Amino acid sequence: MGTETAPTIEERTETSLDPPWHVVVHDDPITLMSYVTHVLQRTFGYAQAKAHRLMRTVHETGRAVVWTGAREQAEMYVQKLHAAQLLATLERAPK
Amino acid sequence: MTLPRVVRTPVGDVELRELSPAFLQALRTLPAALEDGGSEQVRRRLYPSPGGGEAARREWTRLVHPELRALFDSARALVESDLEALDAGPEPDGLRVPRAHVTAWLSALNRARLTLAARFGIGQDEMDRREWVAGDPASHALARIHVYGILQELILELDLDLGAG
Image 1 (cartoon, helix red, strand yellow):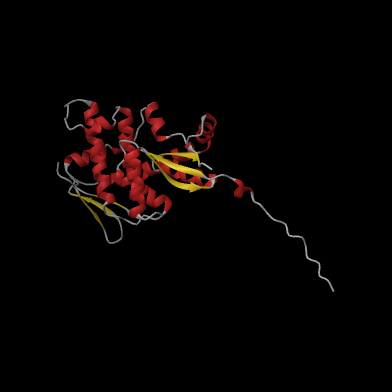
Image 2 (cartoon, helix red, strand yellow):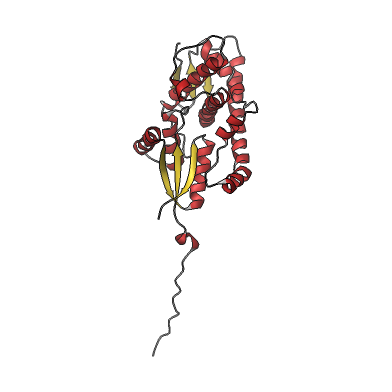
């Protein structure tokens, strides 16, 4: 007796085709480094050491990629960073 | 300048103690420091673009900036309500910030610094300057930027667990 199996359908969601996006924080001469570190910890849940390292990169090079992922999430993070008055932008991550 | 003592209470509130006249004056004028005075430089700094070109900027302005404005107004209202305690009795030298208001305070102090800097054209060179010019509004603004920064640092040093934001 044979068994019929339904054909498998491979689902590909739209999000799996979306390229990732960078959240970039930019330096400014007024905002305290300690405040930037604090905001990165609160916004992304980063440990103090990682947040401090990212802050140092912002301070020393002018900018740092602080997160990479789906566009919608990246936009949400940029909005949160703007709410804390950090200069932040979205960039399409290179393929 | 005598620095205030900033301590955390057992319930997680922040107390600013031994506030000198200079710090009291800076706190009393904090709401005014949050006024943008119609300055386009202030508006551009506090409501930046997310990048990605003009279309993205317009969409961000339409969708996000009203929410930012509401958040900023809410933080200002909390700070103003706490500052009322400075006028509650004779010669106060301290202020208590409830734990639930600390994030609003950190945001308002930061925003005051950015607003003053944008209004008076204060950048890195001015921040590094140490001379004071009596009667010069920009010098006065720079002094307030530093005072608000000291208060921010003292609060951040308490390493309060303020939760995710």
